[in-house]
Length: 571
Image 1 (cartoon, rainbow, N blue to C red):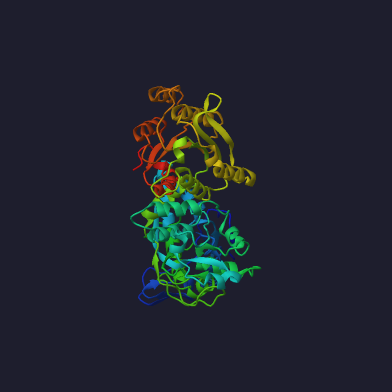
Image 2: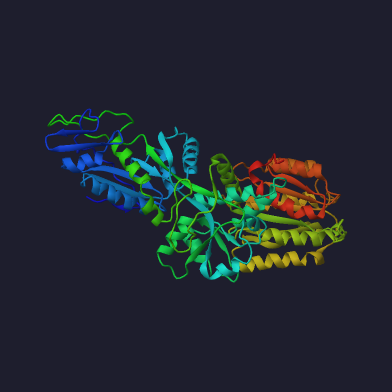
């Protein structure tokens, strides 16, 4: 009887009486012609089964992450053969994200689970809580294997990449083009973000937020898709992944093999815990059931799982053949693209920190629909403290911020001062449209470059703000975060326009909780009316930021993009 490695969910295992055991022996017991061995003080069900024979195999179902499932399937083959084919162990390959979600919502029809990281247990519990479910009862045991987080590079790029140390610090600084598979589905990516945060500035959390925004600009559909993108561009890039995934990819003999680049400033490792699903099979300590025909007893499911777990822990060779190291990181590999010895790697054990990072990632990568409203009043011509004009500094910051946006972000641009378009204080220069459209992106870049030629007039802040909120709500997309990003260097100077009180009253009147449009106010320079900005932000559940120094503007724009989850009470 064989087992299969498949992606579909396994069928519910059936209970059968397959083995004879004796109630108590010290070393070896004999019943008729059957010999039953106790190894290390414990009954060995495989030896007993092989000797006793069976009429129908006992079923074991193990759900394992796709990365380790093939190695576990090989171990299961040997395990089943040793039982005289009286055990049929089915290893079901499934992404850990999917298994965690199914467990959280009610259960997986299996006896054990081997996820790619212990963090999936915390993800499972967090998901269950969000669904109003009780956390599943599981028995998470020690790791059976590990693999370090590495940078994967195309083999043809290896020499060029090796000219400088490959490190998390270079990723943070934007000096190493990096592809990050979605951390919602990849524990390797999530652990990579944890490592990245560990090397970021403790004094300036914006550095890490900015790096996540840049990494989220283009999220590949899968790790395989990320690997396929390597070697295709003019500039060598890397993918955050694991050593085992590099080995598995190379085992398929791809046109462009990969090499694992080990971070020069240290790395983390994923563990692979053996998780007993307590709701399935026999409970711990369950007494063997009596055979209705001959009064003998069958081995419990718990004992079979014990035996399979022991076989997995003894399976160093098949695990190493698949690119995995021992749970403590030791072991030698002889595989293309990876080093023989593993790097020093700390376990990615801080699950709480990883979940916190994941929540921040979810906020940063929310697909946005934003109307950028830019002050082009005459005061933007004035020099800042560093000698550049205010408009020049804004141009630099805006172009830098645009480079961090995902192509799925939709962006439009208005400029404002006073009486720019007849009696209107604002002028629509680019509609809200996806940045994935190269022509649209080029149009916006052209608008930003043209800003110095558009300067003039006073600051028509309040009329423009109200009109911008109305415009975004008119074309509201419920699948995206709809917002207004307004940048100004001053205070309202339109004597013919509405007052602050009127603006706040109008914003309250048109407020629609089903169509929120937060206004993100960014004040630039010493003349901004920060109290008014804060009131507008509060009325729209947005946020107000102040960049008092020229060099702060780029940082403030990152804040405006990264702190959506804390509004309206951002620090």
